[in-house]
Length: 90
Image (cartoon, rainbow, N blue to C red):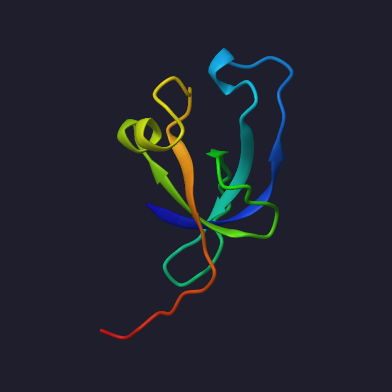
């Protein structure tokens, strides 16, 4: 799992049939210190997240199967919208 910020949505005229009706988000991963990566990840959203939201994204077929369904052709899934977080010292 990792945390990132939603920077936009993605639409595709032609896509895998299993993505029809699914909301796709562009998410920029964050490092442990909160700095944003330069990469963008496309994740399936079932929680109605939107631009600016911090989200938790999980990757893998097991996560996908349990959340949005085994038929979905993406293994990156938004599983939480972050309300807040705290970094502690160990």
